[in-house]
Amino acid sequence: MESYRLLMIGAGRMAEAIISGLQNQNPSLFSSVTVANQTDERRLINLAKKYNVHTTTDWRDVINEVDVVVSAVPPQAHSTILEDLDSIGYKKLFITVAAGVDPTFMESKISEGTPVCWMMPNTAAQVKKSMTTYVCGRFVNDDHRTIIHHLLESIGDYAELSEEQVHDLTAVTGSAPAFLYLFCEALEEAAVSYGLDEKQAKLLVTKMISGSAEMLETGITANELRDQVTSPGGSTAAGVEVLEKGHFTELVQNAVKATNTHARGK
Ligand SMILES: NC(=O)c1ccc[n+]([C@@H]2O[C@H](COP(=O)([O-])OP(=O)(O)OC[C@H]3O[C@@H](n4cnc5c(N)ncnc54)[C@H](OP(=O)(O)O)[C@@H]3O)[C@@H](O)[C@H]2O)c1
Image (cartoon, rainbow, N blue to C red):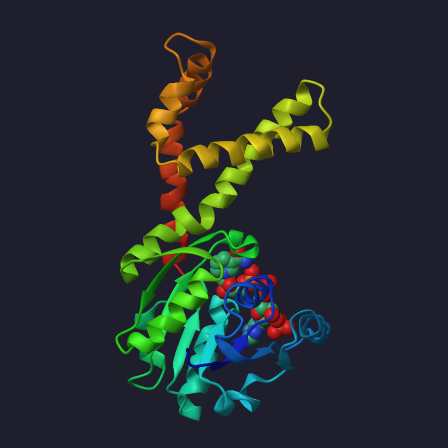
């Protein structure tokens, strides 16, 4: 496979998840990796030591020497970056992992014909278990897709959706881990109230969640699995009834809607 030169703009958690994933899964995809951020030079020194990458505090210095740019900076930084890329005349592959920065927006800012891709990973990218949704712009060809797929597989699983769907599903794949962690916190609190210390409570809940996730991975539906645990009139049924009376399903769906409404408002 051909080898490309990568520029990563941003040196935060998501940038590191991708760099580390690439080193483990696809070490030969990029012949060189340069990481850029603006202010935190110590972070760059750490990444250089850990992953043997090049670093810079101004990505514009190296832009003419790279084939692929991945942006892992906050969404609001993208207008400036895309306008700068446009004025420099960059027309190679540009990928962003920033919430809400879709191909329509990118193509309106960058030179006509530039291939762009929007990936929405989640926090589990840090352990190579992200469920990433993505959508490509109009000028992405098969060679670009190969690079995109290698990047995606280095942080977990992935699904190609329409631009609208990536927006709408960001709540389900991107934000819902926070909903699940809130659920875990509530269960941990319950365990502590029965006399466990916090460490034990965390272990119990973590193992319950990972076991349940593994059961889902077998392909049995969530509904069937719930039925298996909930005998009619039994004690689990009494607990589920409380959740249903509290409109649990509706509450979760409202949380998804609120997330999407907020994201669209930006
Ligand atoms: N973490 C996640 O689970 C997750 C999931 C999905 C998507 N994302 C997306 O990934 C992107 C990065 O998230 P993160 O969690 O890695 O954040 P982070 O750890 O806070 O890192 C952000 C990086 O962006 C740089 N930066 C901040 N403001 C900038 C600006 N105005 N211009 C250029 N660079 C700037 C920061 O360094 P300097 O300030 O030193 O430049 C830092 O290197 C965000 O767009 C986020 O929406 C994150």
